[in-house]
Amino acid sequence: MHSKPTSTDTTPLFFRDILGQERVLAYLRAALRTGRLAHAYLFLGPEGVGKESVARALAGALNCLQPREDGDACGACPSCKRLAAESHPDFLVLRPTSEGRQPQIKIDQIRELRRLTAYPPVAGGWRVALLKPAEALNDAAANSLLKILEEPPPQHLLILTAKVEADLFLTVVSRCQKLSFSPLPPNLIEEKLRARGLNPAQAALLSAISGGSLGRALALEPEELLQKRDRVLRELQDLSQGSATQVLEWAQALAKSPEETDAFLLLAQLWYRDLLLLASGGPERLVAHQDGLRELKRQVQRPHMENWFKRLAALSTAQRQLLANLNPELTLDLLGFRLQERGEPVG
Image (cartoon, rainbow, N blue to C red; front, side, top):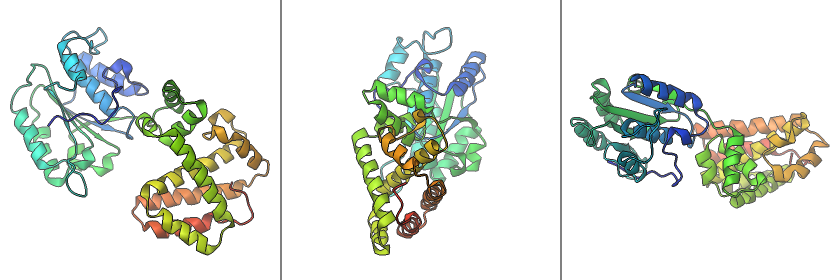
């Protein structure tokens, strides 16, 4: 039932260490202070913005033997030490199993949770169960979970995490208190990355491509990302000067790797976004490609803003189509031809 987190060993364990989610934290602190916690919460937001960290901090605050005046866990009592060591008997994490093509949280896992909820928490405090991600609940598991949500046992708290509620069963969503987590500010992510030893240019690019997710930014390899960015710029240049056959060959090769496709779309969009930002008189400090400022400025001297807008729109359209499971090769074929503007620079 209990599984170790996939995050790094620097995962925050206390409210005071969590960044960028002040509104959510203020709500939960008030609920703790007034004794008005819901029996189940649905944490909504992108990956890597602190949903699991907040769940752990809430579990810590509920079970701390010597809580601080502000309601946060002390970090020193036996309960806090067990939580930090990932051995607390009353903090449970349900994740998808690795079986099958589509990992799922299955009914056997929920049945075991239901069995446990028939008994009081082991340590006498609160039993907190984190289901991550809730999108992985299969039909049978979701229906079984409803029985806990409809008749919540005392001293038990369920926390579900998801990107968006549209991917969840409506009956599950309706029985949870929803809390929305925001993407983290770019400057906060850059600060954390620089503290890890990245230079400002690397931190700016990783922050921009992370989409406000510190977890995603920390998982990216800066040198590898810069190499991919340079490859994307070469491909954009080749597409602008290549033949129809070259476009089709490019699309066929790229379609074989969803990861490389995602990287191409994101990095190319960032490049055109930077061009439009500078051409519109925006501040240089907001440019994602800080190490490419010289080239960006050179291209902005001969602006092609209408063309850049069209290319940015084409990239965004392809991204949406791929998310909707359209044929990858056909989608990239069409994108390649839309990016093929002969005689113009990469931008």
